[in-house]
Length: 377
Image (cartoon, rainbow, N blue to C red; front, side):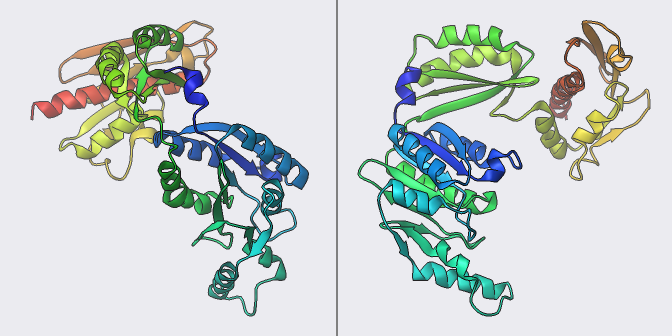
């Protein structure tokens, strides 16, 4: 499977409207979450764009995206104020008049009553009941801005409110099922792994060579100190043949299937065990404890300065002393079996990220230690 072939099949564009996004007042978190949901469901996200609250710019951006995508998901600009212009722009772009929906207006009035508002809502709220002709409405139990979707001869268009707690349930309950039904699900086989302790270019060279003969695609995401490796395909035979080869190659660096970090995996494991792990952390200066300790595992994990603790962690002196050096050293001693692990961590230029690298390395080793102890009980 070539990347170009996949990228031109059933692409789904994402458009966010709002001056607050363009001006940097808020992050466009919807795009990230929606794209993840689409890809996890075997669909191909296309371009992500954001546009200000100017109707000519919204129209221009919609026209551009609709030229290159079979579906468009629009979020934002469905409120009651003068800068909420998405519905008007879409109406012009697809050349369909706006139609007033009494049932939406009734729902808005009922919501205002529940909030203690006497009389009808402000006249400005009436625009929230306007939708392009032929739209299928999507109810919004969390706000006054209903969404909609509509089908053109060649495309599927969704118009959703901007607040994540309003639009994301619509994505799960309406958008994804409809896209699947409409044939947008093409990536049928997918697996991802979180890797630690190997450079992105080094592992990419190795894995890409292994995958090259097969009708599969590879992908990489650097999330220091990890690399997320992804494998996906629509060819079941090639995917299943390649899978064990990939697993064998990544085994020395594997932290989790999916994107669970070593610290997240360890927090879960600490909730399951029936014994106490005592840690004396002389290296991270509290970062390990603040990351691991939760109400659910505090009876299984204790931190102290006791030299008879199950795990004694020392090191990072070069970091804490601010030394101009290439490496900082870390030592983990497991007193129950007198096992010592030493690690040299690249330091120069990494700043405070060194602490997080060390912490995740420590968590991976503690997790292995817990698994060994648990297996003996």
